Length: 146
Image (cartoon, rainbow, N blue to C red; front, side, top):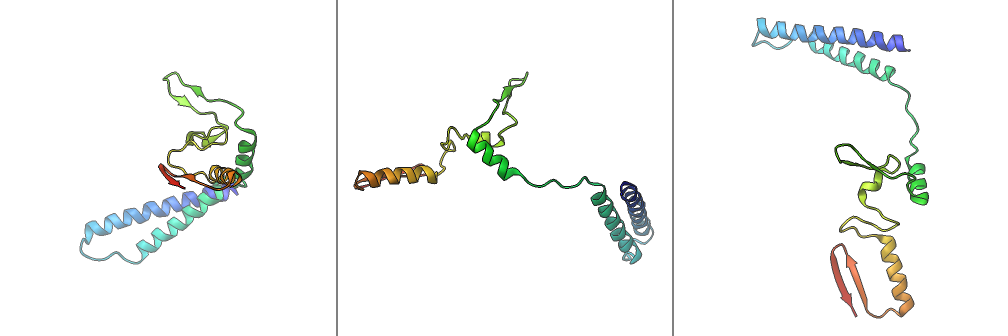
C-alpha cells in the first residue's frame, strides 16, 4: 500500500505541475481566449490522484476514547501538576487539557457560567428549608424572591 500511495502522489504531482504549466503557457499566448477543456480536466485528475495518494499514505485512524478519558479525569482528578518553563511560562500538566477552564474541586471557575449542579443543590436546600424567600443567581445577576 505505501508504494501505491507514493506512486499516486508522484503521478498526481506531475499532472498538477503540467496543468499549471499548460495554463500559464495558454494564457501567455492567448490572453483573451478561454482555457481548453483538457487543462481543467487534467487539474481535476491530478487533485483526485493526490487526494487518493494522501489518504492511502496516512496512518490508520484511532478510535475516539476522549469520553472515557474525560470521565476518568473528572472522577479521579488530575494525577500531575503543571510546571513552569525557563521563560516563566506556566504549562499545565498533560493529563487534564480542561484545566484552563478553571474547574476547581467540582466547582465551576468560569466567570458568568451557570452551573446546573450547583443550582440544583441550592434549590434542594431551599425546598428543605421550607421554600420561602430565595436568592437566585443567573450569571452575574442576583435576584431576590420573597
